[in-house]
Length: 241
Image (cartoon, rainbow, N blue to C red; front, side):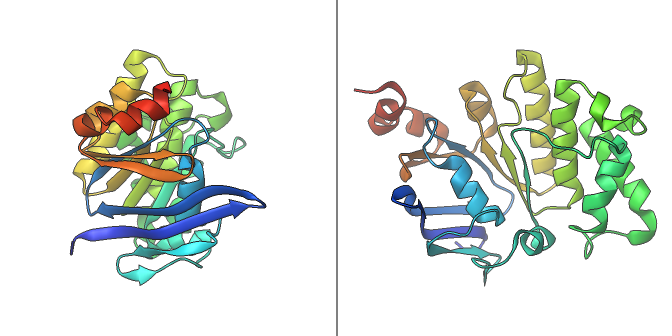
């Protein structure tokens, strides 16, 4: 697969005597929409932490655009084009919405940003996300849904080639979930490959071209959404025997 942008091979991660991930293999093609699902404690966040560099895996390799990044620190992975949003948004609350975006533009996207136009680029991201009118507002005063949008905007400001959305819709209403889905679909249409981690299955099915499933630290399914949901192993993982 020549258009594979990210490849995880035989990845394992242990915490003392506990094996969080065991020989996980995963790939992502350029511009793809991948849903990553699994029961609580299945290893999804651990896998993403290893991909982003927040954790170092014990075994296996991570290859991005043909280069082994397994031991690169997080900031170098971000500069290469891997960005993630977090389940619990943590903006710089003393800064405005606009100022929050200047940081990833000036640091993570250093090689890809037009440094004389940082403010213009930040405003463009805010317009894309739907936060342009709140640019001057303190990030600490945002509503829950706008906080989630800002978290996505900060990831987008890093000008990623791969964006990992970690439960961006948790706790939102149905209409707010649809709003976030449309934002992610819009980002994907610009060429950004997206890995969506989500428990809201309606969102996963609407967004994903392909779905991978983790259970107890192992990948148990990988394929088109309908066939994955119909997989007996997947149903067993979610519903039990």
